[in-house]
Length: 268
Image 1 (tube, one colour):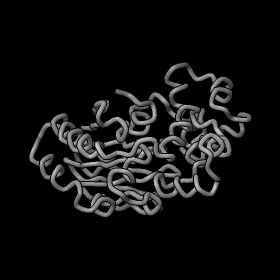
Image 2: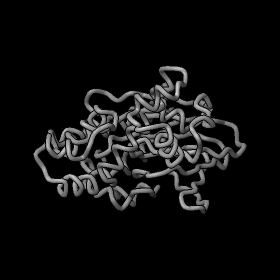
Image 3: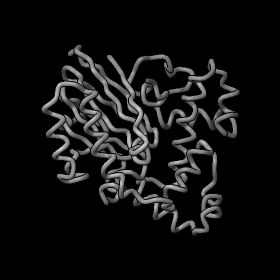
């Protein structure tokens, strides 16, 4: 399986975390785990369909998808060859770009049209006429860059998100409210609409995802990881890790070439 991560241009980076490509000619079914990282995604399949298991039931995915925020892990499985182009979006990007509420899409992977209607039909049609994934990414980049011209500046939800990312999730909601001079109720409402999760839970995901960067940068020293990721003790750390991955951290294979590790370790 070939993975590729492509950084957005300056004109699109307020909305896009990265573009990504996954390709594999092997038709053997392989079950992949997906774990929360705090970003939403728009995904285009140019190979065979994938199956998804979000609630103990396997379902075939459509070829164009929107994946909202997820609060726990789930599984995917290919049904043939893999040829995927994805957009990993900043947490509030879809709400800003397409004027939709994010709450209805939490823990859901839906047909793209159910999320944004026909607003991406033209770019998708153009992409499906190509057979080069990097050129497909160029089309998406141009589309997002054009829409980003109207992207709001200094929106309070984006200021709150920036604080959470800068603190790697180790921040209290009360501190965010104090910094932005807003009430707890207001920040909760903002996050439900623009992100789809509460600010506390979102910060918990970002703190968890920071573990993968710590592991990438250093050999696993669990005592150091627990401390640097801001957990009270090792048992607290293990509970959180299991909640998001279904596995004990010492059993998780961080070096495995998988979709989860590609996304979480931000591999190129």
